Length: 384
Length: 187
Image (cartoon, rainbow over the protein chains, first blue to last red):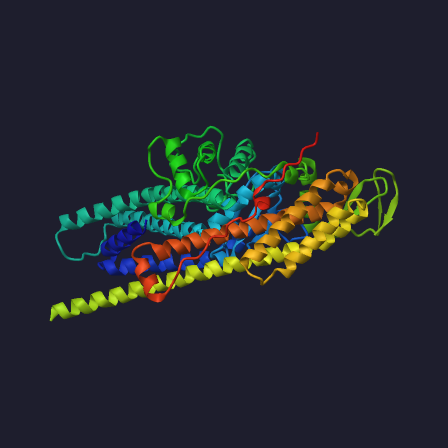
């Protein structure tokens, strides 16, 4: 992708100012500024967009503990900040420009729906994104893509003007040669954005495979993530606050429609059913080599998911059994999980809670002016 | 003349490569040490949780005196074993895991206790601490693997040999009690 940017910059610079190097420098400056903005402000913008609420250990101990466990398993230096998004859609994402300043967010819908093993798998996937610096990589690629698109657009605009007015600075050399070069630049300006986009999506998909493989490695239990993805795939709810720019960082493509073609080139995530099948085919162990093997089994010899250096960096590891029955018994049921999550959200939105003697739970909005509240169920009056 | 410059260039590149390899060996070894320290942190956390657990259970299941005492004494032994070497420490910790497992099995018969909010929160903490202990051990083993690979593989083994980096040991599970998954049946 960088090659496209540089070629475009150089070509345009040469065509319009007679100095290729000048064009290159300008392209690099634009790229640099956009990178800095994304680098410094990226995660707060993203979390603000999603209306995420930060939680502490007391708010939701299970989620906090799971993330702490995965931080240990992955060897991350600092546990990421944890946010909950009030949305019934099933999704989670990770953000943060370097592993020391990262955050993880999950929707309330997903938090309610998953059991402990599945939640562990999802969080391991998000933490893998942080550990592998995918957030930085994808932001960098996005900025690169944006710069290419912007410059191409500008180039087309200028060409159009140039053609219309007929005035063009001559920079020596034969007219025919100049026209050919201009044609090349024009073609580049049209093709570069298309190719850059395809490359961007391919990179995004590849990093998703890596995150899935890392999740299996950290938890030693690929079935957890597989069944979580199954639950996610079963839901058609669209996430309210996602947009094109933030899509790669979510665990499931927030824009997916059911029944999308398997080899869709313009998708930031590989298809869910394929990811589930790969995870479930990991029979021999939980390492990257096993993931690669499973990938090849599912794809019948077509292509690789992980690079060779990634595979060799981790050795052979065994799978573990699912949590034993005794440990799983006291796990909260779906209804209890729902109560937990809504309690957290009410609290984070500054609502007070009053438990009436009849069993009703009253939620008082933060700015209520009255000093007395009547229980709608039994009529008891509570003083505030 | 050119030949001299080329040789100097090659030497400089080699030095840079050697320095880089040495640095990555140092980094990996420090990761291993850090991972080891993490295991201790989690083990300590478990020690700190146990008195609270024993108190909560006592309130509901006072008949189970023996099991409770076993847990408390196992915990004290494990605390005493800190600093007495890896072998002694892992043995004591395995005993503690066994005692805890027996206590949790016994607790299954007390529905009042199982419904108590305090106990549920404690149980989540315990489950999580057990998980954290095993994940920190897992990460320690992964870190040791990465480090050993670097020490043993060519060409970094040359640098390792020159500068005295040696392989580290994996954390192996030593006692049968720890390996066995507790089976609880309700017949």
